[in-house]
Image (cartoon, rainbow, N blue to C red; front, side, top):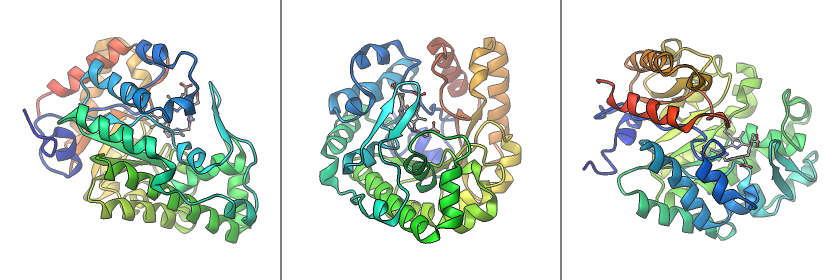
Amino acid sequence: MTSLADSPFLRAARGEEPSHTPVWFMRQAGRSLPEYLAVREGVGMLESCMDPDLVVEITLQPVRRYGVDAAIFFSDIVLPLKAVGVDLDIKPGVGPVVASPVRTLADVEAIPDLTPEHVPFITEAVRSLVGELGATPLIGFAGAPFTVASYLVEGGPSKEHARTKAMMFGAPDVWDALMRKIAGISAAYLAVQVEAGASAVQLFDSWAGALTPADYEAHVMPHSARVLAAAGELGVPRIHFGVGTANLLTLMGEAGADVVGVDWRTPLDKAIPLVGDRAVQGNLDPTLVFAPTDVMTARAAEVIEAGRAARGHIFNLGHGVIPSTDPDQLKRLTEFVQSYPR
Ligand code: CP3
């Protein structure tokens, strides 16, 4: 039995040779699993995130079913905002909805900083999970400042992020204060998870692909860099992921990542030279899980082969598991990746 420190996931994240290519799936816990739907019956999303027993159970479900090489903590990127008192909800089929969107400096200043006392249920859930998981690493996570800002400023999910970017372009003082506020909250939220035993962290900047490289570098990257630097101080590997980031991969690595998450639109052989001496994570198109098994595994093999050129490779989908995914197909994919010759 390999130890936690020598687990394939942590070895690959550190750029060391793992015994097999490690695999886990973004959004592996959730609506694609009947056992998830069963325990969530009648329990709201945020309510379930604040119940340590449910968090432990939901986090473990995909580990039991698939035998993936890492667990990701069951929570949401807006949970820390809820914990400090921001009036928001996660609406089924919609996503996070904020009652009073943030528009002014006073709105920003009204958001408290996060302390461990705001999230005792997170500490409790992580501690129990780490005990249950043994040699399987637990990935903690937080939302990056830009992606979280988009929910706060727009008041809900957005395609264009127009109000958010209008603040970035037109009200630099409000923008800077907001990004600093969220960076502090995300860094504190990651610290709580790592101090309770999480082995790695992932910073989700899902919507960063809405930015040009110049705007990302000037207005967003310094704030994400502060979150990643704080996580680095805690001594755990840091994964940095966004969607539609072909033009940003170099900067996202330089922001302070050990592993750059690549979405499915950018072939790994194009991505790897852009991230420098770092590991990569990704990036099978999540819809390939709906293809015949031999088509899916042939494409997975291409991803693994391309990953050999990187300093390290953690196999994943190029974005989250689609809710209508067949769990048996993800199980086959997991087994295929883990048994693929190194
Ligand atoms: O398994 C895991 O990956 C861990 C759990 C997890 C959730 N949200 C649970 C969740 C993680 C890592 C997240 C991160 C998250 N949340 C991101 C970044 C990742 C990404 O997908 O790019 C973002 C942008 C959010 C915000 C958010 N929360 C969205 C867009 C949605 C989906 C809305 C919908 O229902 O289609 C949510 C809700 C959410 N977060 C669900 C889950 C399981 C569904 C809620 C439910 O079951 O009712």
